[in-house]
Image (tube, rainbow, N blue to C red; front, side, top):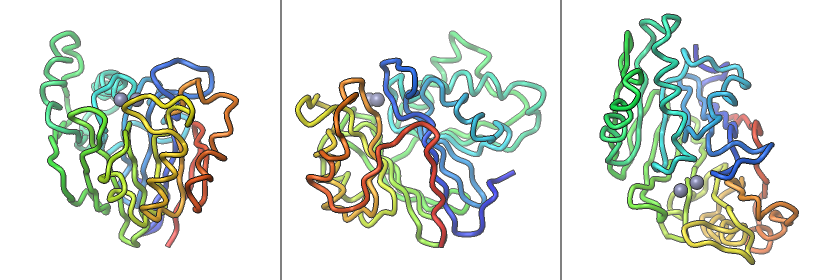
Length: 260
Ligand SMILES: [Zn+2]
Ligand SMILES: [Zn+2]
């Protein structure tokens, strides 16, 4: 069953606004994108499946997983997902699509050498190694864009039939591609891993996330992927110093439905 959404509507839910460092209230990276015909995960870090259960979406209704890159905080729940889908309760379910940069099949094959119970049984697993570009998935237009973080990092943008849109930076350092990805987007979910005064290479800060969002004319900036260094820091103020749109500090299970 797809989400209870009308044609053209788009729902975005934060499943994990945290990182590899365990903290009580933020799980590692995971997001849910829903349209009338699709339930898709963007990243699947450890804890994503639990948060997904909290949204009421059953694994039987999941259509796709889009991985931004292969760091463990973004994909560790792929194994548990594939194991769970072997349960008899999901026998004959619809195909599950996995999307990521080249290396995905090797990742899955390697996983299966230690966890053979991640191999699909009684359903079809469709593996898509993506080149940069756009394509249709169900009722969504998807763009995959290379992002400066690892050699296999992709940002994703999803557009509903109404034109409403959301973009995900994944982990990101400064790059022009990020501005293209977020151009005029309704919601720009963007790495703001460390405070402005404690920048770490490979990641953005609130001020830098804001600068990219400003140049892209994104309508709202949802900052995410907060390391504990951000605790007690007014990250919203840092973003507002460089960005005039709506600033949102993401937290787990924060959601918005974009209507026509
Ligand atoms: Zn990373
Ligand atoms: Zn990360």
